[in-house]
Amino acid sequence: MSDDTRNLMMEALSGEYTTNKYYAKLGRFITAYASAEALVHLVLRFLSKMEDGRARVVFGGLRIHDATGLIRAFLELDPLPDGRSRRITDCLDHLSKLQDKRHKLVHRDVTYENEGFVASNKLTAKHVTMVETDRVTGPELEAMKEDCVDVYIKLLDALAPGVWKGNDWAEPRVQQPWRYKRAPRANRSPSPGKARKSKLRRPDASHG
Image (cartoon, rainbow, N blue to C red; front, side, top):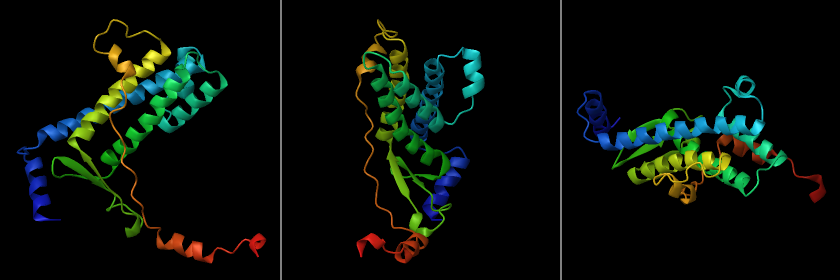
């Protein structure tokens, strides 16, 4: 651990940290994401057309990946009119991008650095070739937080069109383009185990 990192940790633990605004941005993104994710469960219960109490028993506690999968299945089985199905799937697609970023910020080693955060799995990766490092800036955190709010607003509007009509703050956000744009993933070298398996794979007999 570098001296700079050690000093930053000591400052954070002692309450003398000077970058509170960036931790506030991180916290607002995490809480906004939680609200958007919670609303996904409401969408699922709505589309199931089950009585709410029964739907809670059946779907309660589902992981977000499973919940979104069921939502897509329900929409394919019984699409909503007026493009509402497309609007819901668009929200789910974007929420998946935000979920990936949120997962890394919550479950990996995270360090404040140069007005942003660096998340790395260097302490938990199965092999050094599988180490990934992601950086998120303050503006990106703000954009992702705002997108989470918009996911919430857009999903509710897709379930109940016009629900935000007359709300000067929320109504314009129904048509708001996504703010956060995910950067292309960096290429990662395969682990030695995968490389060995690739070399040992027998050629297809149909090719000679």
